[in-house]
Length: 245
Ligand code: HEM
Image 1 (cartoon, rainbow, N blue to C red):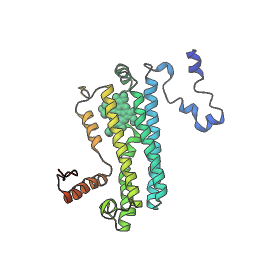
Image 2: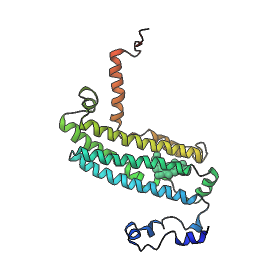
Image 3: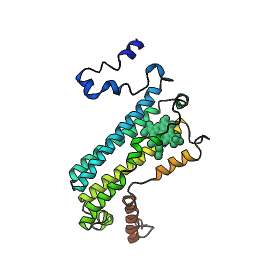
Image 4: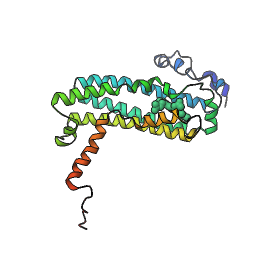
């Protein structure tokens, strides 16, 4: 196949309506020139990171809308938009698989191109990390306090699968998927560069492990343990066998 022809034409002219609307000329120029890649995996490496940044842009923007709709107590909108956030997070997780098609050696070659660049500097990730607190405040004031509810009531003593419960579960799913991204990212690192390298020891691995433990909405996780203890108190720590032995 004619590689030079592909390189010369792949980005298009940028003049057709589709190209103009989607700004494909600029979009397809966001990666290094074909001739500058250090190996056959670098295009994939750049694209996966760039697409992840785009999904994080969409997630952050959608969370702004979710916050507005929570304040208006428009649960239908909140639930639909959370589905969008959850789907985008699932895509972010699934996309990490692509990078597992890159050999450890080829990544070492790419790593030399990154300078001091690190995922810690990701603008999308840093923005999303700051968005859970205002979301929680809106949930607490609009769905709980305004109605005299608590997390305990919506999950247990006054459980009715209410709007507050459904929104709480959407928040929990967002939290869980974000943690899952961090977990799968650690697995990707293990697969690519290993977690025991001297250059990673200390700050790098500690940062990843700490991040993996962060929960956006701890109350939504604590309630499950509290319920297990409370309900467990009724039948004791060791339950009677249901077979009667
Ligand atoms: C082969 C692929 C990858 C490797 C080897 C890798 C490696 C690492 C390492 C070693 C760190 C720890 C911080 C440091 O030492 O700089 C880190 C952090 C990070 N990386 Fe990656 N990464 C990869 C792919 C990705 C992708 C595709 C994303 C997509 C957004 C990403 C986002 C992040 C983020 C957000 C952090 C900060 C982690 C946190 O605060 O929990 N990485 N990465």
